Length: 464
Image 1 (cartoon, rainbow, N blue to C red):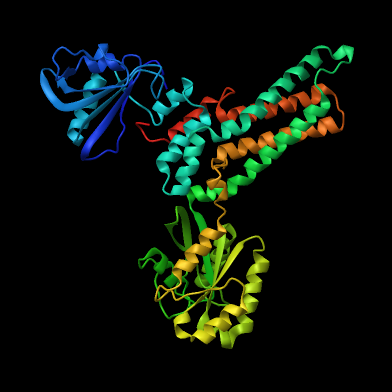
Image 2 (image 1 turned 180 degrees about the vertical axis):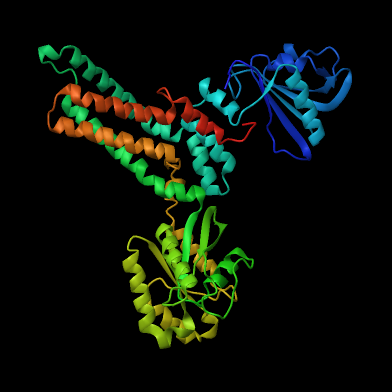
């Protein structure tokens, strides 16, 4: 990316709409637009206007009006990119969009690369790297939870979490380096007791952030919930009832579902990705067995498990059902498990009460009649710990941050080990620098490899 030229791109989705916004950024952005903009106020010159102002007029090419537009002017350094920015709001015709873009390409602009506006904002110090990455997450957010996490990150959540600790570590690193300069005189400038306290504190913060990733990543991408159980207990019917559409095939024939079917719904601002799986049973059918193996794979990767039983078979198959539930608990001891008794519409109230007493936290419902679904949804949201969101805690959702935090934790653990063993200062000073480098890579405070920047911003949409 050449950061000295003026770039242009459509900032709104391509296609026909009421309005479209075309964005330019660069030293000559205002100058280029001014040469082809005629204000409705004849004496108004765009170059002379103040920053953060909007002007009504026409985009002109060879005395021909392309469109009536609103032009917004943002002068450096008080703009999104830190450069001169012009945003042209035109009518949402695809023809008009391209006419305006092609006009300014001829006048010296070039098409922006993916994420180049945000990359320039990072390079010009308008935001750190973690905030820049959060911009893409805000755009991609599809639920209240993912939006809240992205906004918190864009406001500098992880940066503020690490800033003070990193600053203190830098101070100690400077003292350690000073000790190396006087290594022949056997002096200590860094208080080892206080330094060890800081290392313990940094370790605790890093572990907390690392532990938040599994939850944060699930919230960001939708919490996977595997619906498992024997054939014909109503797993596909439940999926259809939750989605309110006929997504999965429902049949009285056992083994109908042979592959995992999944879709997403949002409950109380949290996205859940429900996975309907093949019924678990002993079978000689090769294809069905493949589906059952996939059931266990999906259950292994899910955050929550829904184990369904047929309420109308509980009396005759109680021991078998209890064995199946215990087997699932043993196989997935760390998974959160909900037990659902489906087809309660076939039972009397007394039978339902007996069933509820047999299992702790059992949810009786009828997927066919769509009764009991509200209780299920409440249980699902109750199992998701959204307290961290409510308390505005920093939750890691970015895999690059997760990797850097793990690397920083490994380095700081080596530092702690070095202090405990009282090894030579020059040996663990390398680990201090490594820890600082990994923390700095999260926010871009250390030199970040250009390939990494290209990968990060290459995932953005053009125009952002």
